[in-house]
Amino acid sequence: MTEPGTARPGRPVHAETLRALLGSSRGLLRHARGRYSTDLLVAPYRDEFQRVWRTVDWVPGWFQEGSAGVLYGLIRDLRPGCVVEIGSYLGRSTVFFALSLRQVGTPGRVVAIDPHTGDRQQLEGLSAERLPSFDLFQQHLRVAGVEELVDVRLATSLEAARSWSGPIDLLFVDGWHSYPAVLEDGRAWLPHLTGAGVVVFDDYVAYPEVRQAVDQLASEGLFHLWGSVFGQAIGGTAPEPPPAARRALLLTGRGLARSLSARFRR
Image 1 (spheres, rainbow, N blue to C red):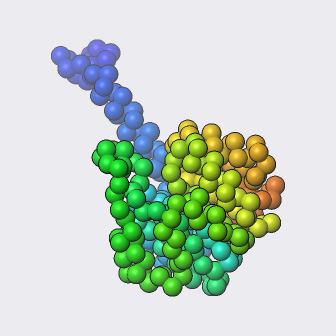
Image 2: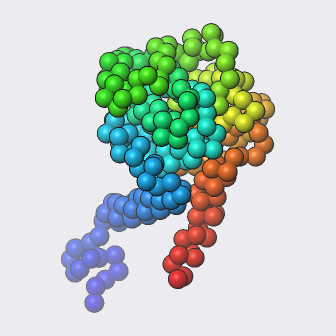
Image 3: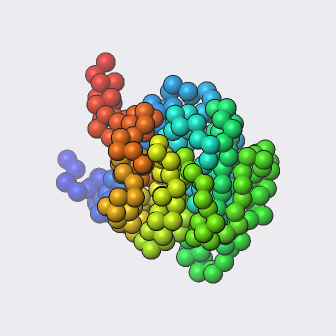
């Protein structure tokens, strides 16, 4: 009989191996849950969403399909005339917004704001001060066929905000992930949201600095924080979310657990 704590006689199972197996299992469960959540979210418009995502997924970056599914639903609800993106990097999310506007048939435009001096993770990981990304960003817009739908602002968020005066229907904040930077972005851009405007802050869950800043902005009354979906904070001018946001919050929270339970009881 095998002794407890051994895989077979004479071969102990190391704690590191057990931790790795446990971590791998948790990762698989998270992936499966995320995949199922995404499938549920885009089910009412799966084919049209996939026509957009097939192109977006060829652009390098960290913008994920689940987040795209939430935002696609919001674009269908809001029919935004103006989408402002703070932080574009190589254009993955920029291409998504532009293709989505075209797909749903709204004449809106994307304003893409980025100094294109490098992504924080890359800069810190490579101990670099600057990694220019503008040329590749432009090429991705060009090959995706969305150049005419994007107003490019080669500037920092605050530089662009100084001359901004128009209304914003959908604000996507994915700039520098530090507490001061997120506070500055929010204070500069949130006042421009329309009465039905929606804001999404990327990496709300992954970065404590981002989460602290977003919570601070909500406490200042600059927007209503409805919750988080796929690690992103989602909120808006109105106290209650629009249908797509409400559905996303339900399916990725306790509502998802209930849905999964019901599915496996069949």
